[in-house]
Structures are given as structure tokens and as C-alpha cells.
Image (cartoon, rainbow, N blue to C red):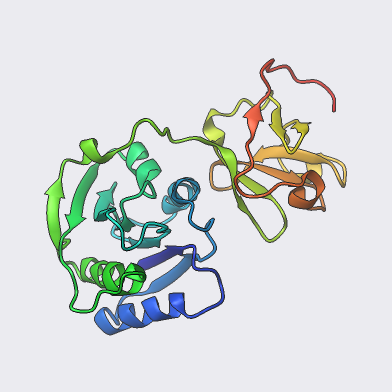
Length: 249
């Protein structure tokens, strides 16, 4: 399968144009829409979401990923295989968290260029054809690189910011839940929040943080919107309370 992960938004022609290329080059391969509203022009936020969701897909899946504010510039185009899954897109940090968490990692710079390559739509013109070729079983059209040298270890796998707001107003952060102490409180939106296991464990209207189904720390309000109640938006910082003590709100 080919899995689409972009910041193009749910409206407009861009995702459809990429799908048309994929259908023409690999018509037998299923195309899955994972996310079309990743935080716009924010590869680091996208990196946290991509790593959280990728584990649900089988080995051999090809992720076609476009969060690319530097399109047409000097950033490289890359393909990597991390724990058996393929990722195709810009080398701008979007794959850094996937790479940091991978047990087995291979990396290619894409050196092939199509006859038609616009300056501003590499998702359609470059990344989609490469993803289709990989999904058909071909080797990435480029040069193998030292994967370890391409990882940015200065940016760790955690990102202490809101990285996504869902339809319900829940605020997903770039913090991994596996490292979160449920007795610690989280500071966000001018509030200090205690943890809960699920929504019904707190009173209606109460704000809390919890370990979401994809392994990230998420902020929610039972029967309400955390975005509205706490005034949260993508990019807002979050932090663990320094004392680490659990007290009442």
C-alpha cells in the first residue's frame, strides 16, 4: 500500500493530483489517506505525528509524505526504509523521529528527476513517481547514504509543543506517552493538568492529559474542546510541572 501524509488540507486539488499519478504508475496498489491536514509548513510537528501513526502499518508500506516549506530549494529528496516500512519525501526533518526510533534503517538520496518537474509541486512530480516505483518493488532511484550521518540527534524524539488539534478540539502533543509519569502534571494554556486514563474518569467540562491511542500525550476536556477551553493552538508549548507533585486543580 501507499500511505499519504501531507499538509495539503482536505480541500483543493493537490491530493487528487498525486493520486492520479499513483494510479497511473501503480494502479494495482492500494492508496490510504492517513493525514491531509498535518500542521502546515511544520516538518518537526509532522515528524512526531508520522512516527506515532506509522507503526499501525505493515512492513512494505510506502509512506508518501509532503510537508515541504522548502520545496524547490536546496533540501534533498530522500527515500528511507525504517523497520521495513518505506518513507519518501523531503529531507527537512520530517523523517527524523521515524529514523531515531528505527532499529533497522537504510537511506537513499533521490537523484532521479522526471522530465516534468515543477518548482513548487514535488509531491506530484517527484515523490509520487518514486513512491509508486518502490511500491512496485523497485529500488529507490538514487544513491545510498550513511543513514546514521543523516539523523539529527540534536532534535530528540520528543517535542514539547502542541502538534495537532483534532475535530473534537483535543490537543495532541509531541511528547511520548511511554515516558510520561501519570503522577506528573502538565502545564499548557496557562493551566496545570492532572492525568486521567480516559474521558469518563473526570467530570464533564474538566481538562486533563492522557496517553492517547497512538502513544502520544494528549490534552482533552470531557465533553468539550481543549482548544477552546484552554485557548490552545498548534505550536503552543507544553511542559511538565517541575515539582512533579500531584496536587488538586
